Figure (cartoon, rainbow, N blue to C red):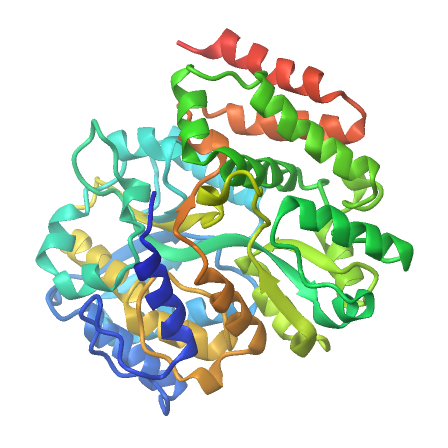
Length: 455
């Protein structure tokens, strides 16, 4: 999944500037004076322009992660209610749940029982291939038909596209990437700039250790964070070529390249760069320590923007890309990131299909994302759109400025592998690395698992 630098810069400018953005033909209203209802109404008007409305009453089931009391979840609920008000023939049964494990279990159960929701959230990639082949509707005809809707998306649709399966089986509803948030005030105390390279990171860390501040604590109790760290290091050192080689078998998880990255992670742990008690610390603790000035940097995804923006130190928070390797400058602009999105069930027919497509367009229109932005006061989104910069929080502005350095976004190392269980294996083994295993043992365990499961 590769984006051009131009496309990403335009997306960044969309949040930072209040001028017109025409790269993808977006000529919508910038929403400066839009009210709660008006924004949702605009989303409905745009999304339903070509789909029409059926008199037949239908019920749609929807399963997403947008549940709870967070601003984005509340905005999602508002849009669902507004859609039903404007489409009284459609009843939406919202089965969304925020807990990842509960969500995954419900989705697996629905799949096993043949009762897949009409619309559901997923993250594409190889893990979604079987769904695309057997359960998801090909959305390409609708994208081809509605060029306004399709043209507003950032180039993320290949998240749901496959070489041996013609079509597009999902559209983006969220855009995520991983960066480093840093405390400007603490960096001022040590008289250094935020790290641009791995060497810089080690030099900065030494200075923070001298004043009793943790450089960049990692919480791997939720073990995806260790996997994210390895992915970033691999992308910055070797680029996507290494990922591709691991997938086709021309490279091994226990070769010198991969062991060197795991060794670097272990060295960082031993040097205190990543904090203490890595495998038993959760992210709430890490975030709290960053907000209270106990740590200088927070390694986090774009989903953390809203928490930092609402904090007392929002004006002190800067954002940088993950540091690059001095000997691999061509990979400096590669970011770990991608998209989550919505898919529709291929079992949909007739009036129910029409209603589902209409809802899908409604929830993923540029106007809907403008509404999200207004309600959450920040964040990054998977579309090009016009926004009043005065409505954007300083952390979002800093994040979007950092995004200007990106030349492309790639998924986790194991996301491209057809062995779905590889994700859990790699993450568990990295957790074991932080718990005391050697880099070589960690790498050997991953490769042994692959050798046993590769077809």
